[in-house]
Image (tube, rainbow, N blue to C red; front, side, top):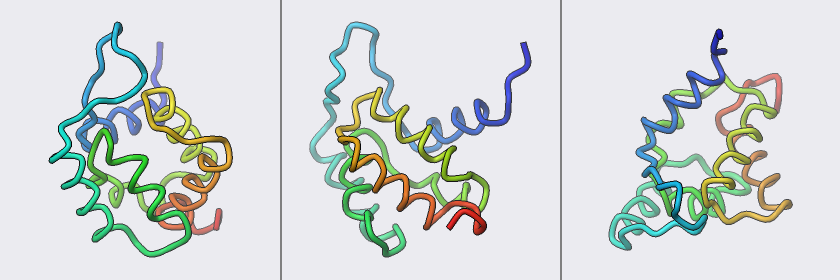
Length: 118
């Protein structure tokens, strides 16, 4: 079976971002070291580009991992690909409702997406 570039990129982003693996038996709610969460959030708020959705993106994502890997994807992913990633993160415990998923996706796309998708 051939794996597409999306699978490889997704795997790289997950590893580069430092996502903590959850066991099969663990609840969807993420538990992390509060000091690590606070450090990840502070760093994200300093490093992420300004824009609508920045704070929500930082809050939702840094509960589990840092966002250091995001700049590597600037200009590479389409909005649809960012939405797929956001939906995957929700399945892994990110707490976002439907409107918030769209806001985070729009933020990621406008900050890191392909220029033709903005």
